[in-house]
Every structure is written in C-alpha cells, then in structure tokens.
Amino acid sequence: MKTVQKSFDKYAERAKIDRTVSPHVLRHNFASMAAENGMSIFHLQLILGHADISTTRKYVQISEGSLSDEHRRFSPLTRINSRSKGGVRI
Image 1 (cartoon, rainbow, N blue to C red):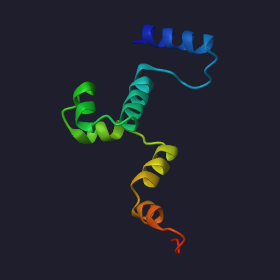
Image 2 (cartoon, rainbow, N blue to C red; image 1 turned 180 degrees about the vertical axis):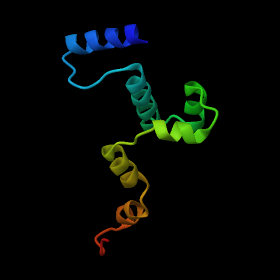
Image 3 (cartoon, one colour; image 1 turned 90 degrees about the vertical axis):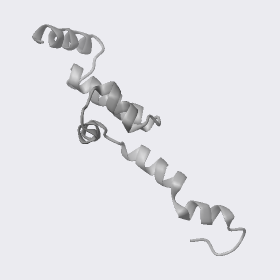
Image 4 (tube, rainbow, N blue to C red; image 1 turned 60 degrees about the vertical axis):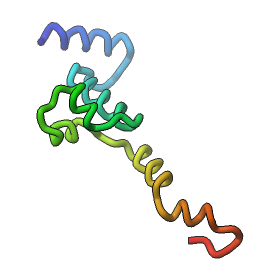
C-alpha cells in the first residue's frame, strides 16, 4: 500500500495539488460526484461493494452548491412562484 501512496504523492506533486490524494480520497470523491450526478445510492452501493447502505451514505458528501440547486429544483415555493403572475410572491 505504501508504494501506491508514494505514486499518488508523486503525481499530486507534479499536478501541483496541495491536498492529500489517496485511493481512499478518490473513492470518496467518486461516490459524492456520482450521487450528485444522479446515480442511485443503491447502484453506488453495489459499485463500491458495501454490504450495508449506511456505509455508502458515509461515503457520499453532498456539496452546499448541489444542496442549494436541489432545493431550488424541488422546493414547493419554486412551484408556487412560477405560477404567480403579478400577484403576491412568497
């Protein structure tokens, strides 16, 4: 495992990445990005090889920007505001 980490460190340095890069970090990033792009958490669970869905949930970190976008898309207020035509807006 140390050989793999040394390779990651070398490539991170070449790419001028200032944060820790490891297989584990890439796995977390993949899980978060896949979920934000719409992948079902159940499919993600199978890809990651987790027996329990709660383990998969720990891997998925939703960004604030994504949370805001989803709120805007699905909030009942958005629907009410889009129907409002010159009336009082909430």
